[in-house]
Length: 286
Image (cartoon, rainbow, N blue to C red; front, side):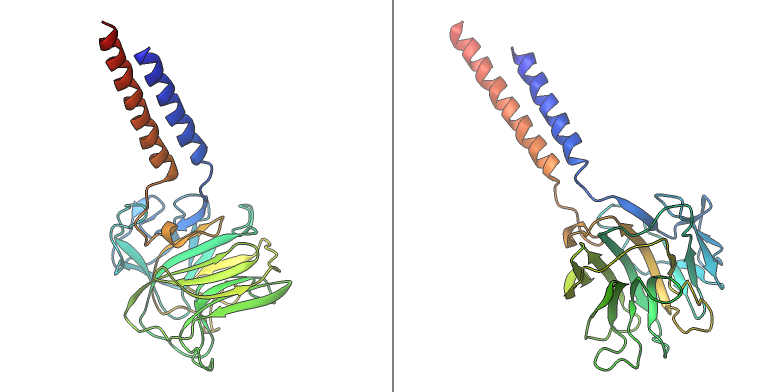
């Protein structure tokens, strides 16, 4: 009887764990800047390719950015992964992300995350952290507003374009040579912009229509040179997920116990209680 009850408890635990594993968001692409073509990157190394750690979207260099010792968190709080290197990006530099043959980066809901450290605001056009575009518009853009934007110069901006357009701007300028974690989420009806895990802006929008569009990290994918859109500074841990994540799920957040783990502990506790009672009953009968 005791073995039977333990067996049932373990089966319930396994079932609960398997069920919960399907509830989480999936990572669509993740550029960590830790390796290139299977080899570890080193400080000062010129970027030629950037590995997508979860898929086949290997990026190729725009201009001559370099890998650099990361100024950001190590290890990454959410995953525990070692973080040693980052992208050091300059004028007319960035990483071009392939679009053809690998499916769309963005669905009806998504999250973009990245660590950034701005070393210069430059001037002119808005500076790109991550940008997707076609020939005429910017379907997805996460970056910095230009120095010519009244009231929001050199601050975070998240914009979507499709059936109409919407933009979320954070009114407070960022500080140079300061590490930040940024995230932009979209759930099909609402856009949200986060800085260091804190919500700093939101907007209602339901016209996003993702297509197989060009994308780039740290630059404009359509006009990578001479356009003045290059991010100037360090970018790291760029991750795209297929759902609007909660702040507790961001890379910079210490993970909370999962529902499956809590349920598992509860089931195990229940199992031990049942076994204890059965043993006690058996002793009484003797």
